[in-house]
Length: 415
Image 1: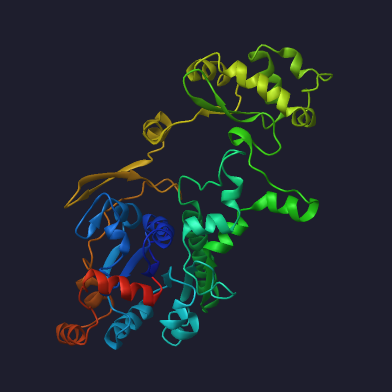
Image 2: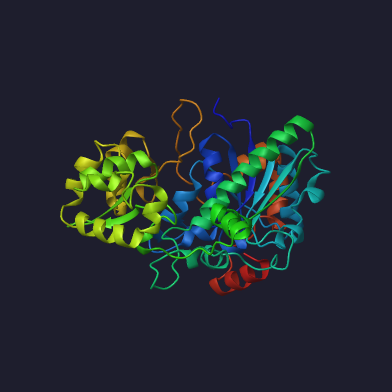
């Protein structure tokens, strides 16, 4: 069996953060059933430009492989009836909505424990389900600013800068997945489920790590550093070569002992040198880094790496995305996977970095909206044809609204 093949997750999820967390679980074999609200045309990720047609997008493919989909309107009594039958068969209800929405739509543990006492309810929200910001929508860009990340990123004389990737969303998804697995373990051990109140805000603050510790205990004030330099280790930063950029770092004294001769200054590594220790290099960083920058500009990236790699000095080129995806180590680690899609043909994407055991994961394309209707309604929920027809007539599976209605309804629902 796959590691999580005996786990069923009902996912009221959308867009990036939530689906990013659950896709790793799906890759490990968990059955992830996406509940897609027909009032909004399903997961909004289906319509992310520029690479989308009708209800399929390459964005959606990235976050939803190996999952199943059913259209279900939880705002109707009939839709709720279906949802509750699914909860009885599930291990987890997983969502990423605004902080006040899980309580409003009744998907917290106290709302569902009568159906399944061991159900684990994981709510990944922008700001959590308590606190003064709980009703605010949470977006990666906003949270990178709120949590101090942007103030730390960029050149000292430049503007605050966000990460090139949605790192709060992705980190939040992984935190939610860890919380889910912890809750599931406890529920199976004790027979009692729980709420897991996870937020992007908590994640972003938590990832301030040691700069936060330094600040709160020693008055340290983080500042942006030139060429992305490490705040305390010198040298450890981006350096410009004659034809591009690379990172060179001396995280241990032994690396500095090896680097000094390679840049033509073995005396820099001597004990009496002002650069001969961590503290000395930090105190004299302006002088040292100016000299290193001039030296590194005299050769190409490949020329420098050809001597730095054999010396086992931490280093590497600053690749663009194409180069990173073509790197021989990317290929050797099987980090590019392929799925077959009826609209896009063969879709290449990056694999999950989560590794459990030696079995190679299987990859199946993301589901088209409502693709698994019959399986979910008839096999899992146990409804016969007459019951499905009545549920449909009662609005359980909804119908697509026009774009203006979708936007208005989404805003009202906190999506």
